[in-house]
Length: 124
Image (spheres, rainbow, N blue to C red):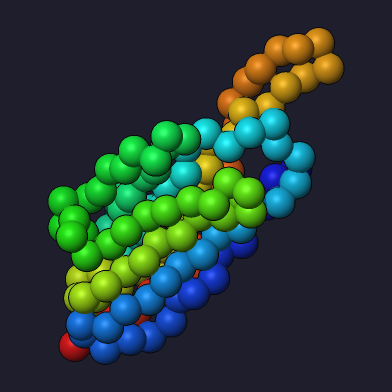
């Protein structure tokens, strides 16, 4: 029902910047958490950044001070501003959302959605 589409990935040189966007569409009562994950070849997927409904954020230690996650609830969109990119940031980046849905009998439940991913490659 809900679809996420990421954009903004690409190839940059070390020290460069990229801004990832993820727009959610479909039926949603509300969006709870928004996050970005990444997965490099041969490595496990890891949480890069997360932002809750109040704007509180959490970051992977290795990206603190370089990456900034933000959200625009009016547009059902999340962003990841990535500055001072390093080769070790190379990965497929996935957006993630927790969605609160309501049934016709006023029952609330949570759904999780993932984007298909966007490649970020940082050349040394």
